[in-house]
Length: 532
Image (tube, rainbow, N blue to C red; front, side, top):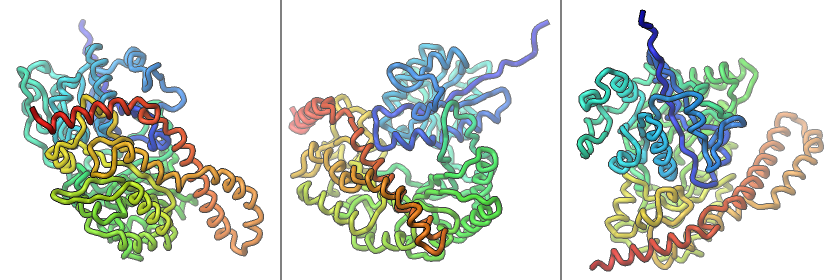
């Protein structure tokens, strides 16, 4: 008698490794990307399917590693065969690794799927000819369920099996077929909370959570442009509480670009978090990304501090007004300076995110020597009192207005010379505005951050440790003494760690491997501009 037991199938979602050490490498070993976990959680709820996530940047202590870097996928596939493997394409710099892995799995007879911002506006044909069977266009929770249902059917090998699925692209008779786009998700309550237990091997200390998707801003360099869609504040609170009770979580990163966008709901959320921490006798460390103009709302800032929100990440982008206009930022440097001081006054740790060397807008000429630009950045950082900074170069990401503009101007270096692996903000990717050279552009970020992150903070860390008992006994209030000591110690520790990161930042450029590629790119670009 034939067995009636149905074979369970497995989806594996892979987060590809960074191509080289960068400023995100340290935090990547303590967290993971939220999107792959959301997709895997949706699949794990399906009848007959299991799901798992392999984050190559966070393999923990026991994750199988390959000699070439990343995970040993042949070993993983032997131990736990996957029927379908999905790849996270949210970071363009990891796409070459993504394609290498896709081809590897294709050789093992596995169906491959990819999704993420890299494929938001273009590069679909590139993916479908690089080992990917299907590209998911847009958000994946619903699309992946429909696609896996189709792939597990009896007619899974026929085009008709997937033709009715919205939001995918595939090859048919050598031609790219894109099905109609799916409407952005709005009902988030129908999905389960992301299940971080599905992330194999990883050691997660900082848990990513979200409430709002989309952004109404129109920054030229960004692909996230859509009407914000929010889950209820109650859902985010319940999600955090769930992680505390099931994962013993205490550190969270709210990935929304617009924390505080729905003011009343946000204040309610903060009050609920404060009460919950008081009830369980624990304190959380919460980091959010927030706009500068929220400094004008003291009630919101006070509620945030009481909720345990200690760190705010703010996209200043540039202290140079001409560059802010080119980015479509409706603010100037003086206003930014006054607003950031409000955040500092309320006791927030401010992490400033900057873009150095942004190209002038269409029809505009902006000639400023690199040394003067560096001085402007250093002066702004010093005056603002920012606690930590990251300074990256402009990245003309696929699907952005910035890439389209620079391509029309014939300034983007050819991909055959400067490939996607360099699209992480550490390398010059286009001809900069004169008189700045690409070599000067690349070194500038390190020059600016070297003023913030210094070796001398190692000595100051030791001094903080030695002064700990003296400081506490010299203050009347124990809590106030601890808070003052801890903040000073944390700043010094982070800045010393930043010095180590910059020292370790031995990218291809510093080793000399990027320079020959850059020279080729400039020659090819010059020849293209000159024409026949």
